Image 1 (tube, one colour):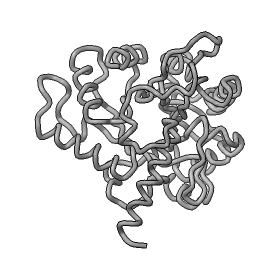
Image 2: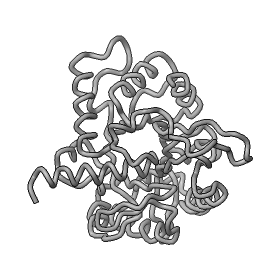
Image 3: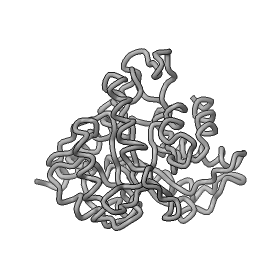
Length: 299
């Protein structure tokens, strides 16, 4: 296979996964609108007409909200994040060890509620909207061991999750992406059938891994950019941001930054606007209502 053919195949894989997440089966470069495409008139869980889901809204540390998952979905978020710890064979959700609670398992907070919601929503998280919700799973314990247990759990939910078999992607109502401890990469790469995908870093761009394995690259905003929203964004940093995004999209990958300013005010909104303008695919926040209001106002 020629280099050009291999590159085309990588982009095609990423386009397929981009379509799995957006419902469009188009390239990530196409997926720059804020909202999901309606498959029919959307309705919320009560059956009342629903608002368009926010495909670019990511709920950072979602489990710290009063009602994990539910609060984010009530604000229309297209991506939620859960930190997991492997403890005595169970996958517990918490930010640090002091917050571990045997009752707060990944199944109880996310997997079972998502399964119930998708069944009630006729195969979709947001009934009437062709969007695959991203579940970003941040591994806090040993990556290899924790991922193997996570893989076993995801398999139990069958077609609920987007899967990849020998590079071929089958879309599910939920797409699991694994972040956190880098040790997960090895066992993930060994699987012929996966129900999860790998969250890369900026250093993975240009590395040759297929987008069917690394559909998303995430990195620390503050470690890569000095601008925090005060005054105009420096031209050199704006150009670098756009190069990163265009390069990722050319490889069929989406882009997210964590550690962006998240205190309400003009600086946060200035950064969010630059991210949207550059085509960054996910905006990271702990402020559900704040990001929802911003994205709906931006249109």
